[in-house]
Amino acid sequence: MVIGIVGESPFGEALKALQADVQRNGMKPVRIIQYGPYQEHMDFRECHLLFVGLSEKGNFKRIIARLKDSPVLTVADTENFIASGGMINLVQTGGKIRWMINRAAADRAGLRFSAQLLTIAVKVVEEP
Image 1: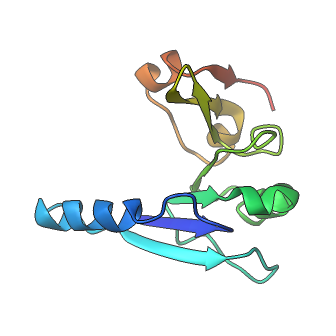
Image 2: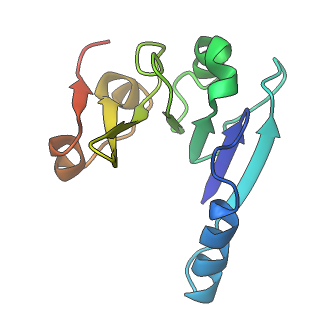
């Protein structure tokens, strides 16, 4: 599993802790790639999941375009990410982290969400 982060990471040490837990439990390793600020030459297609930081809000459409038709799950926690073609936008409601899903974007990339994940989403966008 390869998790990429473009822009500033809001995760602090949490991803290192995840890697340690995965290793301790004998699961498949998780590799974290911190790309830093977006640059035109970046290739994110080796990622399974790409988190796009708030600092890259102005680059959402460029980043999504670089992944066109690639099976990379795109995730952010920033307003307008879904409208820019991102797949999952994390939102805080009632003190809990929930998500909005752009099912059309995931379908174009050949990714499918479970019915349970779709059912508990705050919002599901079906149309491109």
